[in-house]
Image 1 (cartoon, rainbow, N blue to C red):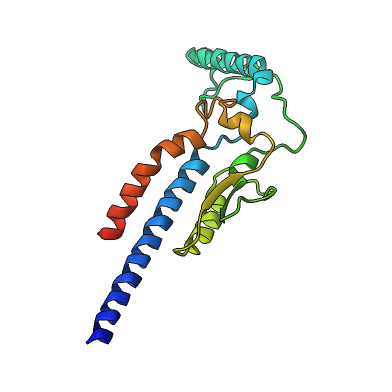
Image 2: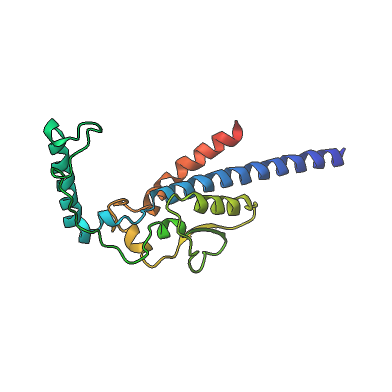
Length: 193
């Protein structure tokens, strides 16, 4: 009789651990997804140094759109703006040679018990690869691990968190931290259903 009782207790403990692991994993997925999606992706058109060029290019576009309203400025067949009417001018948007946005978004790392050291070197504008790699790591979570770290070690991570980017004026980590309890409640509900 005591063996049957211990077997049922062990089954209960195993089930509870499986549920805890599932809740923690699902919560981790939600945290990572929000951090990645909220992470700014460098867009030279938003940089302060390029605001004059962006404004000028927009003014040229709007001028050409205004010219399109006059049928005399359009070609007869394709109804496109005639070359003599169209303004072909723009200012260059400045960015470092070979620049591509997505380095910050691509550098989110998930680790257990110790924060990640260094950068991934990944450029991930969409964030899909970063989430896939992080979710793979989160799938390895087991009850008994002490901590899950979500780390971004690019040198400009702290300024971005402090609102340096207009894309994330309130940062990412602070907002995500405010949502963790809701993520946890949602994960519990998902595991129970």
